Structure formats: C-alpha cells, structure tokens
Length: 366
Image (cartoon, rainbow, N blue to C red):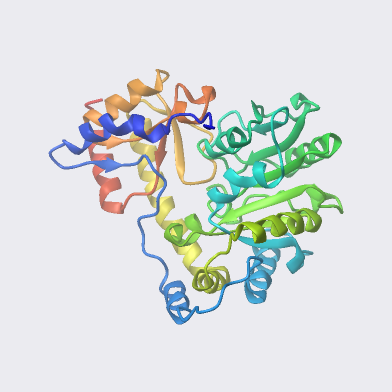
C-alpha cells in the first residue's frame, strides 16, 4: 500500500536556493521559519539539570509541566479555568497536527476543513487517512461530513488574526456538525498590533462555558527558540484530551523528560519572550519598509513570523526575481491556491542578514 501524498514542496525551491547562494555576498534565506537566535540560558540550564533521565517519561507530561501549562494559559492566554486534565505535551506541534486525523480515527468519507491559505501539514494529515480536505474560511460552508476543523490564528503564512467573535462562530458551527475544532495558535505571542497575545479558541467568550470538542495547539519553537527541542502542547476539552492521551500512550508518544523540564523553565519566563519579540519587531519593520519601497504590497501579516507580500504577479516570478539578488523566499502556492500571487517572507534571519536583504532591495535591481 502506498499513501497518496503531495510532493514535498520545499524540494521545488532547490534551484532558486542554488541561485541565491551564488550571490557574491551569499544567500539571505527568508524562506523557512526556523529560529536563528539563541535558546535562553535558563531553558538550556533546566535541560542540562534534567539529563539524568533514566526512567521513561510520562506521556501525559510530568505533574509540574502540566501545572505550568495550565498556569501559562491563565496568565498569557486569558483562559483561567483549566486543570491538568485539560492539557498534554506533544513532541512538537507538527507531529500533533499531522497525526490528529489518525488519532481521531478519521478515514475516507470524512472531511477535514483547513484555512484557504494553510500550512501544508493540515492536508497531509488528512491524506494519511484518506479523508477529504476542504479549504474554507466560512463556517457556514462546512458540510455535514466535516469531522475536523483546523483554524490557524495567527495564520501561517498570512499572519491573519481571528477575532473572538469569529472563533465563537466557528466553534458553534463545529459543534452543530459534531466536529472537533482545533486552533493552531503557535504564533500567539507575536502580535504586532499589541503587546498582548492574540485571542485563544479557549477564551471564555468563545467557549461560553463548554470546551466540548475544542482544542488549542501551541508550540514553544517560535516564542522561545526551542524548535530543536520539539516542545509543544495541546489544551482543551478534557474528554477529548483524555481520549488522545490514551492513544498516545499506546503509540509511545512521550516527550523526553529533559525537554519537559526545559518547557517548565520556558513557560515561567516572560522576559525572554518579550526580548525575542522585540528582535523580530525590528526585523519586521526593516523588511516591511524595504519591500514596500520595492513595489511590494504587504497583506495581512498582523501577527506571526512572516510577511505575506505580493507584486501582483505569479509567485514563482517573484521567487525568481528575489533569488537573482540572493534572497530566498517561499512561494505562496505552497499554502494553497489563495497564495499564488504572494510570497512568504520569514523574519527568522539574523540582524546582519536582514540588513543585507534590505540593502539589496534598496539597490533597486528587482
């Protein structure tokens, strides 16, 4: 048996990456959102202190980690009434995103809804189980066969942020259908219009007293530079979390004990998150100004780690033009038909490389 999976999209960028690397002053890689700044010292120290990890860790997470997640949701996400039964850690968020249709027992005939501009792993998870993918941003369009709805706010690639009112409308519709609804919230701390995080699907104004069938997915990769740790978690409906935990126990999906200790340290420390946000803010402002001056339009991008940029041409033309000056970006077509005239520009490059990109854009050779 073979799975009908799409081609791995990043392989299509290889010739453009090669061209960008040939630039006399090297490549400025703004294509992948992989952090480049150091992991906070407090987190590294917590990891090192926990390396005598001779026993199997708990799939559910240590009691201290689950309490830390609960406390973080209350402090940073406006969700005050969770308990440890509402949360579990995961081995990064991509693992959970791609596996959730399988963990829920979905299959042929079931519909998985994703945003019109969507991170590819939502569709991959559906493909693995033979489910049908529907790209839709309107809850009223979701059909009776819908069994899982993915929201992504703040959005990757477009930085869109859903209001509490929209989240409530989406949750109501999902419950009418008996569908699980999950919001991928991993960029929540990177809201460029506010010093506060963006709204969570678990906010009391959204749940209205019930978290039934509702999940929030979060990752520490972005806010804490922990991409290499694979440190994430899920929170929401305790019945659903309990069912997912049972399956995960059978599959042996256990976050390593040292990583769990590091997560506790990261969740307790708000200072490093604020400092990292300011680094990204500076890079965002510099790239926004340079791209706009070079004829680009920036759409959405209210939050998150990317600029959703367009020159009103096919995205691959834009990729090629930027590669000629040594800048690599991601074509919007990687994220669905809605992105065919956009490129995604990541903020995850050092200050020096961002300054180099700005200099090249200002030289006006596009």
